[in-house]
Image (tube, rainbow, N blue to C red; front, side, top):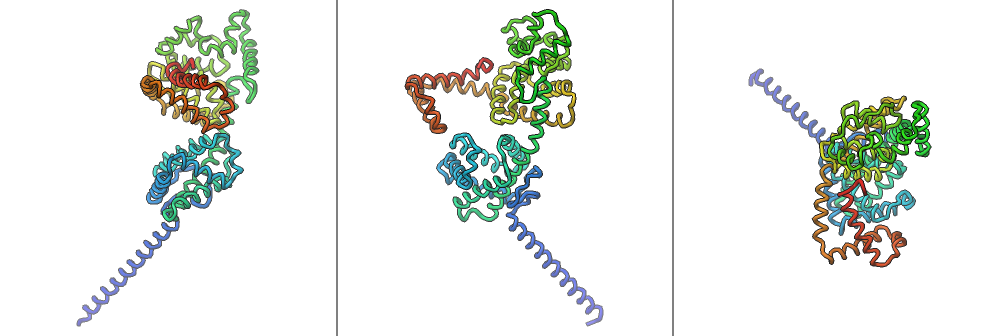
Length: 467
């Protein structure tokens, strides 16, 4: 064998050894990655984990696809294993308050209703675990609904452990370490978000309350009538009106009872409503020689200046806006106000561009609040985004729902009506047993009340303003 051939063979042996070493190193790295994945439950949640509750930030939760899918599958199996969703909700409710009986004082809603709320909230969260952006929106909305509750880290840990332990008992061996870590991380994320939202949004709520009081010449938490009287004195001192009839017509009490009618001259009520629904209000309807000192007046003034005088639907929102702002911290009441407002807007014949209301609203508030700044802009924009999201979710639905309700009610015979009358009270007393103390009338009277309730449901769609 020549020297050259011997050297060539040595080179090839060295290359083989190097490739073998590289292969072994790759295998070790791959094995290490798999171990890390197993140790973290197969997800990459970033700043969120299964042990600690992070309430300092609120970002999107990116859980690994394998872990997220296992969480969803396990939840589906849990629901399928229960007799019904109501039973599953009751199991969660019992597990929570067996773990911490003192927490029951936080919830005033009847047990059956609260159990279903737990169930619906958890179901929304878990079904969106594979979509971080949608999950964040849902958690933020739910956090907004818990502003009135003092959510703390220890309480979040109690809720998390109670739900995880319940699933562990119900699912047995199927509740793997990956599933446990996935549920724990998800519940930590939700609980931390609730705390974060409560702290951050409380500042916004305070800004909204103080600036709204300023915009309407009221004191925060004060008497509305006192604020109106103050507004009346300020207005009279500047304008010095001698005509008693004009003063009465421009008084806050009169404006409150008539809304925008005080700026429309002597137009009959029927004509006002007809013009409002048709969207044919004229610019002259918004004219006012005095500079407005409260939000309703300033809103109409800016609406005319900005070319929105013909947008009659704005009157509907303006009429409800004080109630909306006053109940911004009560999410359930806020949702109810938006539901009713959507019914009123559904009667308007014409295009509705909700962003126009936001533009006029912010312009009016800037004019009335002398200390207006970036924080005010953020807070009021946040409020409007929430209201707009609720209204848009209901756009176009009232007409369809009304038609379906009319069809259903017209198809009921006397036997079906009797069944509804009985079941209404059976369901009501099951949800709120204390209600039995208030219904002591005869069966005939109770059936009459049930009939009226059903009729009022339809009337709410047909004539929301009157109802």
